[in-house]
Structures are given as C-alpha cells and as structure tokens.
Amino acid sequence: MNVWTIAVFEFKRYFKWKQEIISLCLMLLGFGVSMAWPILKGILDKDYQVAVLVDGPTPKLAGYQFTQLKPDGKDNVLKNLGESWHAVIESEHGQLILTVKEKASWQSKLKAELQTWQQQRLIAALPLDDAQRKSITDLPEIVVHALKTDNKDQDDRGRDVVSGALLFLLIMGIFSGFGYLFTGITSEKQNRVTEQLLTLITPSHWIEGKILGISLFCLKTMLTYGVFFFIFVKGVATFNGKSELSLPITAFEMLSAVLFIALGLLLVNSFMAAFAATIDDPNHSSRSIMMFLPAVPVGLAYSGVDNAEGLMMQILSMFPLTSFAAMPLRMAHTAVPLWQWGLALVLLLACLWWFKSAATRVFTLGIRMYGKEPTWSQMLEAFLFPAKMQEIR
Image (cartoon, rainbow, N blue to C red; front, side):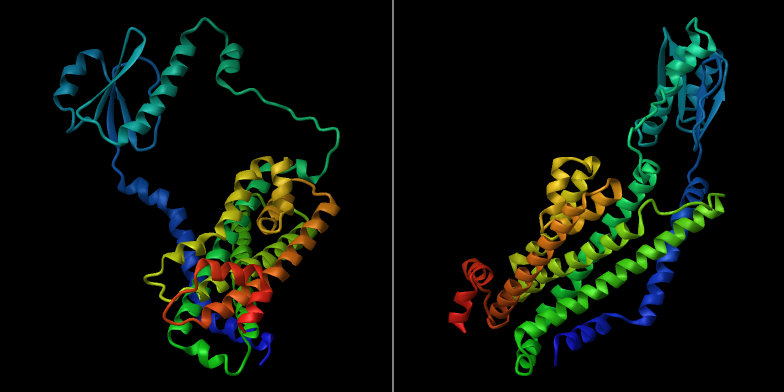
C-alpha cells in the first residue's frame, strides 16, 4: 500500500457526490436568502413616525416616516409620544433637538442621518452660490497620474474582491483540514485503528497519504466554492448590465495562487496531523487550542495587504511559513519581481519537505503513546532532532 493509495482512500472518504450537491444547494439557498433579506427586513420592520417641527425639506431615511408639522402641533405630538409618534425634531438657536420617550437602539441610525441633514441645512443657509456649496459638500476628486502604467492600475475594487475571496477560501481550507484531521486521527487513535494499520504500513506512508488526500479534498472544496463564487458574481453583474466583468489578475497569477495555496495546505495539514496524533483525549486535552495556530499566517497576511508594496509584505510573502497566504494576496495587488517569486517558492518547498519529515516523527511518537500524551520536550526533540528519534526506535 503506497502513499497515493492512502491519499485516494482519504479523498474518497470525505468526497460524496450527494453531499456535494446538497452543499451547493444550501449555498445557493444562502445566497438567495442574503439577497432577499433586505426586502424581507424592510417588510417586517415597522416605520418609525417622526414629527419634524422645522421648515424646509425633511430628512429621508429607510424605515422612518418624517412628517412636517407646524410648531403649534408640538403639544399634541408630545402627548402621543411612544404611541402614534416615536420622535420629535425641532431646532432651537441653530441646534437640532431630538425628543423621544425613552432611549432605544433605532435612534442611533436616526441621529447619524440627522447630523448630515442638519449640516446640509446650515451650509444651505450660508451666503454662497451653488458652486461654492458643492465644493463644501462634495469630496474633491483626486486624479492619480502614474508615469509607469500596467494592468494593476485599472481595477482597485476588483483586486479588493479577489483578496477577500482568497482570504475566505484560505480560512475555509485551513479549518476544513483542521476538522477532518483532528476528528479522524484522534478517533482512530482512541479506537486503536491506527495501531492495526501500522502492522501493514509504515507511519510515514500513513501520515503522508492522509495529509495528501485531505489536502486535495480541501483544495477541491476551495476551487469549487471559488468557481461558484465567480459564476455568481458574473451572473449578478450580467443581470445589472455589467457583462464585461472579469478577474483583475492574469492566468499566471491565478495558477501561482493555486500553487502557493496547495503547498500551504500541505504544510498546514502536516502540522495539524502531527499535533493531532499527540492528543490522547480530544475532550479533555488542553492542547486542542494549538490546532488554531495555522490561522495566524492568514491573519498576518491580511494585516499587511493594505500596503502590498511595503517591506513587511515582501518579508511575509517570502518567509516560508507565511508565503502561502501572503504571496497570492501580494500578487493580486502589485507586480512581484520574478526572483522574489522563485525564492519564495523554493523556500516554501524546502520548508514543506523538512516539515513533512518532522511531522512524521512527531506523528510516530504520538501514535505509539496510549493513555498519556508526550511531553512538550519529547515533541520538540522529535520535531527538531531526527537522530534522537532513531535512537528511540
């Protein structure tokens, strides 16, 4: 039984056509509900009745009905405040006053809108012509003139969407691998399944096949949801008359992102497979929190994406423990020198090769200890010093 046979077994163990179709249907249902939710919320939420005792145009805000009244109607409104009326707006010495029966959460949205409305009223009262008022209320336009142009200058919003989608898919892939490896390895260890399997195969073949199979399954899930997300966005854009919508990255950048993410999944899953084997009882072990460590590189990459050309992002995109998350994000925003891309790939491959060997040693140590967990020093020795593991054997 070779590594590929075990990988295919692990892949098919979690890949079920029926479940895939159900998942896609549930995702379609989720998209449908999210699109219909604003309409449903508008129907279910009642309109708050607000009396405006101020001259001029009334505010406009969804979910609120503003009715302009004469100042002599104030007493009648205050008498019915909390029943037929929810708030009263009046102005005194240039200051806006909002009167309510009691404080409530719906007033925050109203106060924010009233601030803007009052600011526009004050500007309108100034002795200015239309052009001067427009220069105060409208944000000035900044024209960026770059001496060197490339395709990265064209679609800022599209690159932000690509970055958000990559981060979402990465998080989904990492935590999917966490779930499958953690439950699979700990349950097999508790039920003594691993002990029986190791009479037929070596620990290295077992863990490598398991990591490869589950990583391929996670990558398949990410690609499926990525393609589905693109088709959905394309469909929405076509429906809105924007049929020219396309991804703001090249085919090479897309393939590069898939390559780095695939290698990153193998790296992360190697860590989680090795660590899961050291947990004797997942219900009582305090080490389970360590399984969330692989999410740290994604968080670091996200923190640096607002300055993709900066030194921090350059370091993160070449450091092998963070490059699988940082390099795709960096390439989505800026041009990366080919030597940096190549160096990052070589370092990631070297780190993955060393991590695979170290994870195998920790895995071997963990599955051979039943009833107790290996100490931190034993794990560190197994992880860093292959010679000591050979002495133990």
